[in-house]
Amino acid sequence: MKSAYLLAGMVLLALWPSAAGASPDSGPEIIGVSVGFDQTTQSANVTDQEPGTVTFTGEVSVDKLPVQRAVVMLESSVDTGWVSQVSPSTAVFTSTTPQSFTVTAVVPARTLSTLKGMLVVKATMNSGGLTAEDTANATITVDQYYLLNVASEAPYFETEKPGISTTYKVLVTNKGNGPDTFALEISNLKDLVSKHWMVGLDKEVTPVVQPGLYGEVTVTVTSPEDSSLFEGGPQAVIVNAASVGARTQNLVIALSFPLYFNQKAIDPVFDVTVPIIVVAVVVAAVAVVAWRWRKRRARKAPAAPEPDEPVEVEPYEKVADE
Image 1 (cartoon, rainbow, N blue to C red):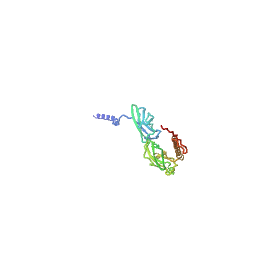
Image 2 (tube, helix red, strand yellow):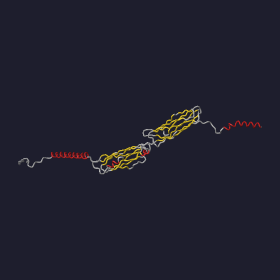
Image 3 (tube, rainbow, N blue to C red):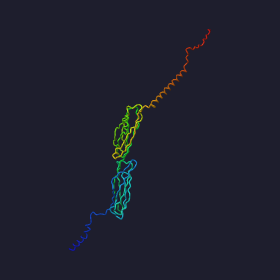
Image 4 (cartoon, one colour):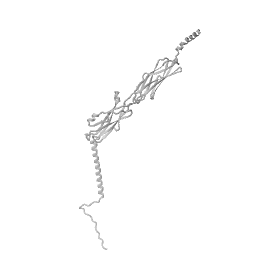
């Protein structure tokens, strides 16, 4: 009996180390791959004609090597459809030392500043019959650029009399890639005032204008009331429009647009001399027509005898009585 207890104790001592080292949750060894970016956000600088390019730097690594080497494939994409490329696209590992890669994305020209792109890099490892995957994300934003255009429905107006007011509709178009407002002024206002012209704007700053749309500004022009009849001719009214958003970036994006206002006047050479010549020609033509008409009537009427001219009388022939 005693020997039986001794044998059982020896068996327990023999089995104890393996039982103590065993873990109920232990399983097969896991081999993994990881990928990440040094930066998680970058901005693309685009223009109305040129695309913008951003480049991210990242690292890919494997935590263990199942065999002597492991191959990791890298792929990139952007959810907005922008073109991207990762280099190198294949990484060969013979140790667990991380390896670097770069990803370049191209943002098309005229892309709106309100648009964001999600860049995704996917790493796939195949080695020793084992497969592992990991992904990393980064955000691409778009810088705003500022551009404008100024035009008018009719850049030339004319008035018949001094002191008459005329209005212009000036259109300021946002040619940039983000919302903007525009400040307006008459750049030659001092010169116009010195000549007794009155010029005004219905607003000095437009409301917010979205890309591709325009803001409307009314310009009122009044010619001098004391203008003489010979002071006509075109007068330029120069409207200057500037991007308010660009000023916040210490930039000056402005454009000037001339409007031409013509006050009709009497030209001593053309407006006076020419009408007189026309009237004279008409009067002469009427006189010639009247003279010809009188001459034609005179030809058709019988000639009247002169006062002292004797009148011939046909001799009277007496008829004998039968």
